[in-house]
Image (cartoon, rainbow, N blue to C red):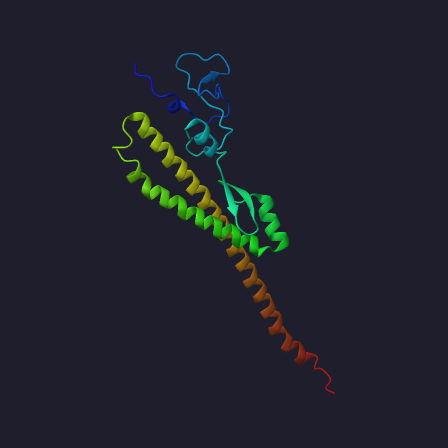
Length: 197
């Protein structure tokens, strides 16, 4: 029968039976019977997999983006759940609006860049450039990589929007409570008028 490229067999299960060495060889971790699905240790994010091995995994649970912030100058790791909890805690504890805005701006800029890359990829790597099954598969890996990056950025923006909406709701509740207290104040004055001097 026809043998598919090794990367088409990769899955991301709880246990692995092969590893990939630096020479791009699959190495059996345990004896493997004929017909057994190969499973690779997916401890690498898609950026590392793409740069080291030229492959990516769909919905890689280890996938991350290193987001460079301009102010303050630092890098944070975004994952499929968004911003790391320690960064969220820092923003909340310090009421650090500058950091929140910096993450938002950097995330929006990165999303714009990824969307633009996804838009031009089909024209740049068309059928005259990507001849053959291997080249088309590499193009698919690039598309999958960019779509994964876009999913992380979108999750981050949704997380930030949810946080902003929750803060707005808290402010409205606080204003309503203050309004109720103000409405009660005139009644108290009627019952207990102040002495005028």
